[in-house]
Length: 415
Ligand SMILES: *Cc1c(COP(=O)(O)O)cnc(C)c1O
Image (cartoon, protein in one colour):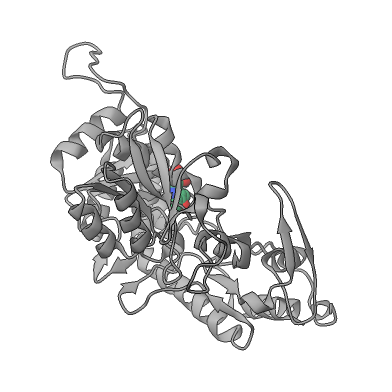
């Protein structure tokens, strides 16, 4: 079964999942910060980046912060989540969506995803409000750049009087029914981490239409100083403000957002075309109503074409079989050719740290559910996508020639 694989040599340079692309514009803004000596958490790059992002997303206020996680943390504080507050959270996501809930002593209740966008299932969310009518907060992520069914989720939250926080860290530039992700929630959060669609090397922003919230967040992020001649504090402070140097990188990247999206879209479409005929599907993009940013291309293997794959807490074993494969086999094979893929983010309810947390699917609380529901589909959709799915090398600098080799390598896994 390795015949075809032997036709290829490993890539000389590592093919990355998603790496930064920095241009001269960014460096000019950074140099300018240096030349004018605005080398702290105040300066024109910060102000301009905030303005450019709030214009792009269509929100009144953007507050530049040290990272996306800091944005989510201050969003959670601004929403009033504290010790013991229950919060409905996206289950299939990166842990940074949820960790800030823990910082404040909140109690996450995980909501399963659906197959059309791999994001929070509005049906499961409705079920969760039935089971926990007292809950007043919801935090939703848009995974891999595909918008969640966010208007439906917004409507459900409104009906139950709940605050909605949007984790748009992976989806900057994506739209749902023509509106940008990050603009649906009471508060939105974005990230400029090195692997995101645009980057400052690090950084993030909190987005809102509420001037009171942005004022509070600015104050918290700069150590909660009161307007007094000395350091006067009435509130816990944080050192969460973005640096003007980082903001220079961000500022120069914003003009490249659309270009990055179209590069990522071509990569997605080339995979979709090239992998046709294999027993797989690409990650859903829900194109009737949304325009994703195509941040990561992912695939999911048909049930019938999965070879045996057993994942423990820290390791995995699998058994290669003719005409079948599994995420672990494909990831190992890609790595042997110096190309970086990644497993689907492991759902929060499967993480040891959250082993005692509540997890709600469209069929109800997971505790008393069978593996397969009455409709013949898995009850735990997040677990199913994690088991059968993987993220493909999606770097915007991936050339069509290299991508074609990656496609052949993936095909060879099914031989
Ligand atoms: C990257 C990411 C974050 C965190 O952003 P940082 O800037 O790295 O702190 C939060 N949520 C999701 C879904 C992410 O992918």
